[in-house]
Amino acid sequence: MKLLNAGNNKTVKGEKWGWRTYGLHLAPYNLSGKNVCSHASIGCAEACLNTAGRGIMHTVQKARIKKTKWFFEERDSFLKQLVKEIKSRTKSAIKNNLTPCFRLNLTSDLAWEKIMPLQFILFPHLQFYDYTKIKKRYERYLDGELPSNYHLTYSRSETTPDKEVHDLCGRGGNVAVVFKDYLPATWQGIRVVDGDINDLRFQDPSGIIVGLKAKGLATKDKTGFVVEP
Image 1 (cartoon, rainbow, N blue to C red):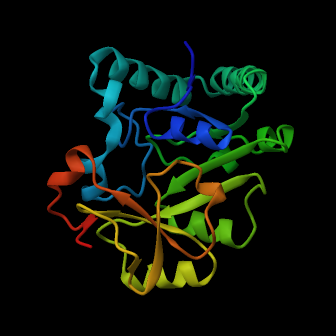
Image 2 (tube, rainbow, N blue to C red):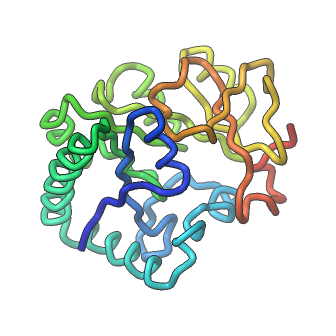
């Protein structure tokens, strides 16, 4: 079973900038019987893009659950396959005159810096990136405790205090916020950049709000996960 895909409608946009994102889709939250999104809020779980695009297909959902069980039940062989694919996908991207980058939490929120720390050392020339809702993890990132080639963007939910957003942005962090209908120029007095132009979060300026328009189930959100501009 292959673990990495060559992107979705969002990540493929990066190819216009010369990057090709390879991502890992696991079964989000606790759909597999194991929770891969420990800090997911109700709004986040309900608005998850797991069923977006090809994700709506039963075969795709089944494959994601199978990958997630493999990760928990046979971790060593899973990571061995992941490393193998990182190497092969890197060669493929370069062959197509693109720079590879990797997002291992497309539909999960796992601390890969703890799961495979040696792999980040093995691939110092490769760019990894993700979103996370785990505040302590994000604070470690801001303190420079994560691998230098692993970029994180903090993801706001309906349970995130506004003060927390200000504090993180004030420290040079970036916070992703989902907006309804359109993106404002600023939010809470902080500059908003369009995060839907591409998925290359590691190229964003520091201390900003990454604005994302509500999509799929998120357009029906009633929890406060989606913000009125």
